[in-house]
Amino acid sequence: MSNYTTQMDAARKGIITPEMERVSAYENFDVEELRELVAKGQVAIPANKNHKCLKAYGIGSRLKTKINVNLGTSKDCLDLDVEMKKVQAAVDMGAEAIMDLSSFGDTQKFRRKLTSECPAVIGTVPIYDAVVYYNKALKDITSDEWMEVVKMHAKDGVDFMTIHCGINRATADRFKQNLRHTNIVSRGGSIEDAGDISQISELVALGELTQRAWNHNVQVMVEGPGHMPLNQIRANMEIQQTVCKGAPFYVLGPLVTDVAPGYDHITSAIGGAIAATYGASFLCYVTPAEHLRLPTLEDVKEGIIASRIAAHAADVAKGLPGAKDWDFEMSE
Image 1 (tube, rainbow, N blue to C red):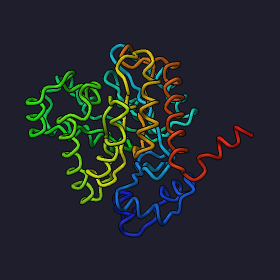
Image 2 (image 1 turned 90 degrees about the horizontal axis):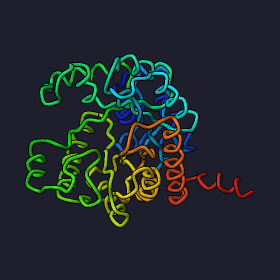
Image 3 (image 1 turned 60 degrees about the horizontal axis):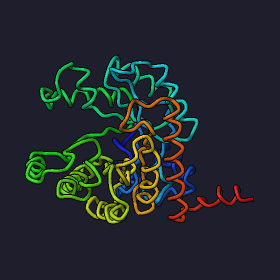
């Protein structure tokens, strides 16, 4: 039995975990310096002890930019074999993380398959699964029921979870007073809504909750917006770093225009490269199917390629040790 509860707890006790050693070797980063960043919360190492085949990765702005791939079953596409092919493609193409957004069928079977076979970091959204698990409307799910699903995911070996804790009663009231062009939808709103009172209110709430989590040795990554004009991205990344005290920032894209359905892997790669250059450390991929339909295996590959290009471009721009070597070898 280890004498620490989380990677942050270990780091604060001066313990260098096997996961920290792996991250240090992969990043070519001093392990003691890495331990200090984990202790401060500026690097997160999502690593569930029940995810036995995990290859641990560190996520933080001084490390290589990591990418996440969303997939999972739904009412319209309940084919586990197809989803596992997407998983395999993601691993083969160098994605560090996979988020299971399954919202239909035997979700636990798929989740356990991921944590028993997939070496990438695995994330989930418990509220999606609660709708499946309890088979009732979102508004009827109690906080206790939701917590039970969180515990179940943790026992199943999931490394990180998205929880929508920035929307509380206070921020909800503020949203109602400051109506948006596209309301509260996935990843914010539209380019029209970027940087508005609702978004900043949520960020402030997330900053307060980040500190609360750290007080209990809980690692945090902060999820940011999905739609933002180019000229706002740098400021948004820097405000997040201040408000959330350097916690790793996770963005979808961001998409820098709303006019390109079918090509949003491109609009998101443009935004992602800039976001990661100025502080984001985790990019959620976007496929050509975003906003149109469920992604095919080919869409997934296109999304990963675009996101990996953005991540690498940012690492070169930030001057991360070794980032340019790949480009130099290509030139040779």
